[in-house]
Amino acid sequence: MRRLWGRLNSVNVQKAVWALDEAGLPYERVEAGGAHGVVDEPAYRRLNPNGLVPTLEEDDFVLWESNAILRHLARRGGPLAVPSDPRAAAQVDQWLDWQATSFTPAMRDAFWHLYRVPEARRDHAAVHASLTRTEPLAAILDAHLRGRDFAVGEAFSIADIALACAAHRWLNMPAERVARPDMARWLDGLARRPGAARALGEPIA
Image (cartoon, rainbow, N blue to C red; front, side, top):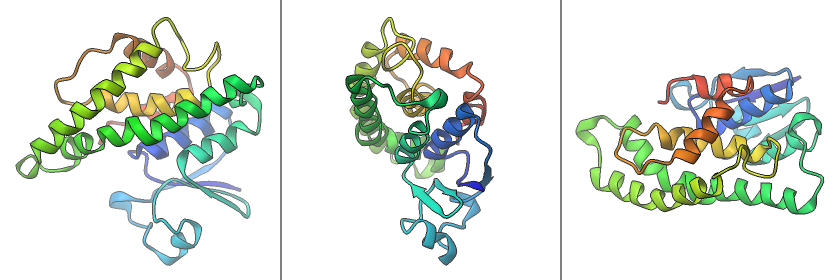
């Protein structure tokens, strides 16, 4: 039995959904978080004491933190296998950590206020500061992707999943931003993958 807890409009749940679909692994997704609640219930807190999503259950094994879930699925082998070259594997880790600690946190306030806060209550200064923090990071990713189809080496990896879910939000943000043509080209290529359909197909909200 494999169960993924989390709502599909969570960027972290999108990463796990894409990885499971890309790997061709059967699973049940249970709505949790946001408007669905669940995450504060005692039964859920026993699975994930943080009260966040996603949470992956595999029989009696429970795992939370989206990038940990990506790494776990990659270690199974198959289409998401961790690169055999230690340096390439380290670069996958590098981009996973960068997404989680730099890129996504920088854009969080802009995303939150532009999508989830009513316009009358938006903190426009917070939006501006968030966009300003994110632009240099978007420039880093855009420059890295110049001439590349994948984030690391010549093959699709979990680094692409993590970065693409974040980039999808950034490139569709309803705000003035610097054009990032290489990021957009790379994301367009990844969005055609069957595994991306569910993760990136939902309206951003």
